[in-house]
Image (cartoon, rainbow, N blue to C red):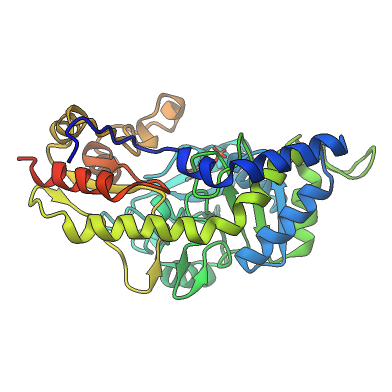
Length: 369
Ligand SMILES: *Cc1c(COP(=O)(O)O)cnc(C)c1O
């Protein structure tokens, strides 16, 4: 093995090599048409992505955060309402709640799956609770059966954050189809990524879709008629065209991630390193391959010194972020989220990773002591 070989955390190069010509073609097509906002590329991609997700409606948005925020806004969630989010997620999940004026209520995830599981949910429900927002973090579907059961029992809506889980399934059903609506991000590094910022909301409810669309288009359902105080958050033609090129390859690219994960899971044997747990009946899409290690920082240094780039998702839990100071939390309030923040290390994972690169990561993790 080449000792000097560098293994990046992620790389777009293999994808660009495979799809570069088609992306160039899409660029030329949009440029030639000179139609950049709300045109045929967006419509075509929305239809294709809805079909992929097995839902009737998809509304393109400017990014994943806006998709979640516009869904909550369209559902009428506002000041005085509470929305349950996991204590361990990317900050966008909670920010979407804050931006509509509601209060994010953190519930601890299952330490094995890093996800909400139903445990601890009922204790967090008050008469102000309106929505449960499960996040299929790292591309691992949440245990949706207990979550849906609790939501139904308490008459709560479920809005899924699918920003890391395009194409993942739970008992054969695609994520994004369990709740009333779901938000997706097409940030470049996501499993389905644009060449810039982009996102989408999907839903079974055409009326809700129309409201989300209007809210993201200056509250307008008809040109210069503004029925809501809206935002400007539209998917643009260029990004929609790029996404249209990449969508047909999503399953293949997710499969490539599953093959990398399968090798990591079968070949890594280090008693100090806790490998990700995959719940029965789910098909994850491995947005992130996150291991846990008591000596996480030493493991990180060990891997980085061997030319392997790693990451942490996420180094500071939301309740300890400066921007959420006013929620009044301190260290010790969410021990599971804190434990994950203190011990999680994300290993290289991307479409086109070579066998040699995978082998190098395996070897480096196994030789850490
Ligand atoms: C990326 C991400 C978002 C936000 O998506 P953007 O497109 O970056 O706004 C929301 N939730 C989670 C869990 C994410 O990973």
